[in-house]
Image (tube, rainbow over all chains, first blue to last red; front, side):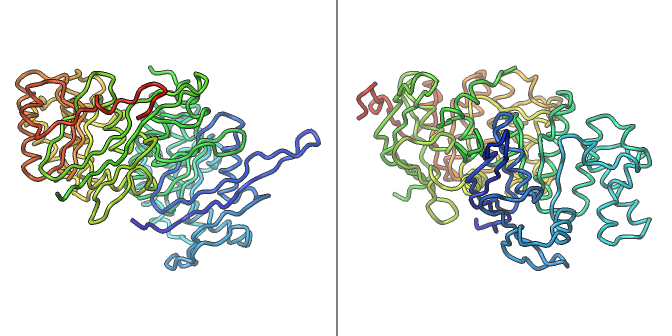
Amino acid sequence: MSAPVLLRAAGVGKQFVRGGRAHWACRGIDFDLCAGEVLAIVGESGSGKTTLLNLLAGRLTCDQGAVHYDVRSEDGWHGGGLTDIASLSEARLRWLARTDWGFVEQQARTGLRMNVSAGANIGERLMALGARHYGKLRTEALHWMQRVELDAARVDDLPGTYSGGMQQRLQIARNLVTQPRLVFMDEPTTGLDVSVQARLLDLLRELVDELQLAAVIVTHDLAVARLLAHRVLVMKDGEVVEQGLTDRVFDDPQHPYTQLLVSSVLMP
Amino acid sequence: MNEVLRATGLAKTFTLHARGGAQLPVFAGVDLAIAPGECVALTGRSGSGKSSLLRCLYGNYAPTAGDVRVHHEGKWVSISTAPPREVIDVRRRTVGYVSQFLRVIPRVAAIDIVADPLRRVGAGAEEARELAGLWLKRLNLPEHLWPLPPATFSGGEQQRVNIAHGLIARAPVLLLDEPTASLDAANRQVVIQLIREARERGAAIVGIFHDEEVRDAVATRRYDIQAHVARQGKPS
């Protein structure tokens, strides 16, 4: 078992100035993520988990430490080894973000282009990579509509005509079309009805498994983490207080905060 | 003896931070080695820590002291300290676990839950489903239930899904937490037979069997955890 390290956080931190005082949103975060591994970051709002996600995905720059990623060569075949993403040009980082990475936003409307059809949303990344053949783009769009359990007959409809759960599935399809190796997800099920959540979770579980995706999922919902993640990081006040195998962290939590978090969950 | 599972100096104490850091000692000084073909029955009063010990062996609980090592793919792996992806691989290929309660995944059919461990070791979807069907049939789970998610099943039905899920991959090490607790006499016999077959194919088994009849029928020896129960403030 020596899967290659895909993503490495080395002492990662971000500082914000609030009310004239510097304040660490997160600091000193260390971990390695291997290919095919799913990591959940849990903690309450304000614990710094979304900031951490944005640092990992290169949407914010680190004030401390660095994020390394196994950047592939442009033809996609040669592993470039771990590279500090801060050293990449803006264009290269953008290329990375729309090919080898996915980012599923909490609000599907943020991650989708609402003024073009569902099919165009799915095809956008492929077009950015140079695909121009209409028939191929269409076939790919239909394939992914089905893959995320959307009615293929609605491929020409605008995302605004879709329900919240359908929009979220469309956003996932839009991200996966380039076969990324790593997907970032920010509270992917929050704000959906419980029954819609279950369906989305099940779909995510299947996709992650089948496509051998690595993922970093920010969630405050421990059930989501338990279902999807191999490993968890528990964050409090910007720091990781406990991390490890998902079922061990939740069934035998060691840190006072994790114990509190686990014991606060209401069982239906 | 060519053991495949070893616990050495194992101890477990829970620290309850919400109770001012109260210490709840469970067991201490557990040494246990299990060879292929053996079935060790953990015995001791209810609350003596049998399930906690089993969970430590599975890597679900972190021992307070000592270590659990599993012979996995030709080498020894410490399930207590290995990185998560390695523990997951050990569970996929080497250690099967039947818990008391089924953790239901929304929307997933009983037959797919049972087929899943086979898929994870590389079996094709068709083959895995077919074999899952054979296991469910053997455990007398009515066929009309197979395509349904087990959330609405009775305790006994869920337990049979759980047993099939735990045994189907023919793992070299099996950990069984009261696999017959909510079964009727006929199904209890089926499970006894399945455990014996697992032993005969060389599985190393550790189990908790409250039912004397089941225990006598499957166990090759007993391990009394009572002798290792840690006392409050006086860990042995």
